[in-house]
Length: 93
Image (tube, rainbow, N blue to C red):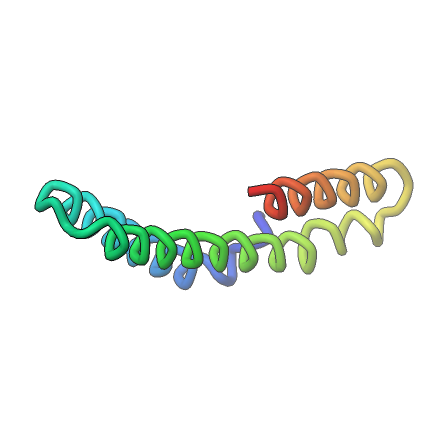
């Protein structure tokens, strides 16, 4: 079972909303919409995807990392390193 199982519906809803926003941006570009207006929508999609990432990360920490920590040893060390690397990727993006 993956860590986001309980949040799957919410995650899918957020992803579908972001997908609709991206399609809207595509239409804006096709219609030669003013650059700043397009950038505003890109910013909104970026924020929406960041929120999805944070929700997934929260679920991963609460489920996968917590379970590995209970097991201890190298399994716990690996999960903590994996989570740290994921956080670093999110911060850099």
